[in-house]
Length: 149
Image (tube, rainbow, N blue to C red; front, side):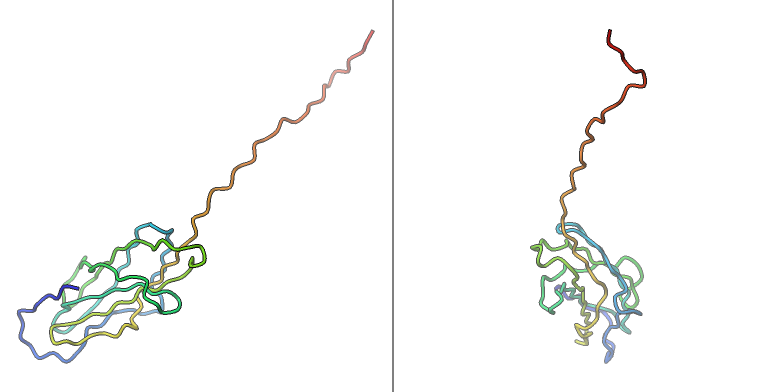
């Protein structure tokens, strides 16, 4: 996490806000090792200066931290941010749903809680393709009867 310093010495008592209007606004399906992208909108009255994103399993255990998000539009006061990460390589017993949570901070030390869920990642099993059965020749009958002399 690399903090960004602000050039605005404004008294700030409000934490940043992640705008999520539903429980899991994004549900992404991926196989282990595939790239995943998620976006979210965030606002702060002065400007967001640090970000953390983490992938949690269904037992609320940290799987791994996610790289610094990049702002794809807007400003530090009101912007759209994108995170990119690789779906975890997990054993078959761990295939299933994970959640991505973010925590944002500003220069005054105000932070959002880790309860902000921006999306769900459904890690799918890598299934080997089922071989297609080869067709076997079908016996044919002759329409013309044969006679022996």
